[in-house]
Image (cartoon, rainbow, N blue to C red; front, side, top):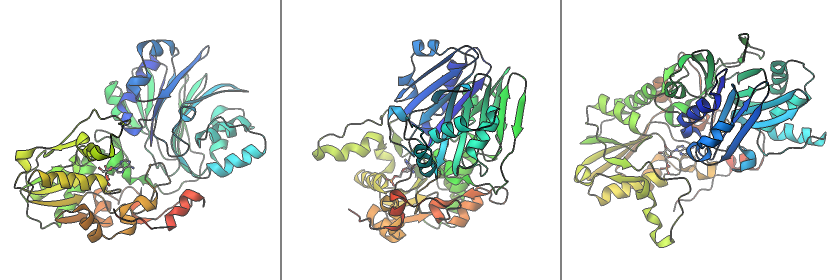
Length: 462
Ligand code: AMP
């Protein structure tokens, strides 16, 4: 779970990157960083925290140069620590190099051990640093070829940016698991995890970077290489369901349209009678609109979200801890009182938030609560770049829908089926990875402690 942004050939490269990262903040809130490299200079700044906290006017002024890359991080491999923040900037035999990565390299531990046993010294515990070491060791003379030789032994997901003195290189893994797109801002090219960043800087969306594409941007031109064996696409379906911003275009579709289509599928076979459809904001909004349009049941904003709750909320005394959920969500009392509600969210992980929201709605007098989820039960963790908890913590890994319903204390609970979900994302044209719902891990992952937990399902309800 990370966001990356890059720009080539712009006098305000760092400033534009800062704005791009603002638009990608939802992809990672742990740390943010920008690196600029051009012929004469290299500068970088990274820190733990949100983009707005990490960069001040003075910091941006000091990030001189016409080419820049930036990163917002939410860790999937490596601890949440300043040393693991990106871009990683190094000086090696060929000059300076900065790299920003979104994804998860599942054989990074193994490759890292091999590199260490032959003398490499690692500064971070991220999978991304492995790429830097492999590039430094490559016998190739051209940077793009060094990158290709570094990526060749690596398995997993990557959408990444590499910046050197002369060029900006974008790469996307052959399965196209994470999104990445190309845009133009007057005489400059821009690359972003999501197209919503282009809208903010008024750049033109050109196209998605193709799965398996290595795109080289330099003073002379734009060059695409496809060095890897072609494989079927496996775009992450969870980007559509939850992770990406609704105003982004990816995998051939606008995220908002897909969320509405998921909601429409959810409503199609549903016979429940209710007075209104309310989303859990913000994640359930698109699906709730789709549900409402298909069922004809009015859409209302019955729940309001406080957008200013930081990640570092300090838990108060245990005796008043139950206020936690109200910090983020509150209900409109007179709207929900005495009503039969359809409450829509995109997914259930541990069911703790949804359970508390249901209890709050009952407290304010809701008559019936029918919970609807615009994805199938999340039964398996993701190893390809989304930070899902281990199987132990996923309630649907060890409980039936009826048991989850009893735990959440709703009047009915319905998930989307796998088939309905596939229909909503137009599976005919694009192929998706839906391993978090099906357990169909198309890339085998190494057996280590965390993955072993996959097979020890002993989660107990409170
Ligand atoms: P819960 O009711 O506690 O299971 O929480 C469900 C909420 O978590 C939903 O609103 C989802 O949008 C959100 N969610 C789903 N997957 C993730 C994830 N990987 N990280 C953070 N939040 C998530």
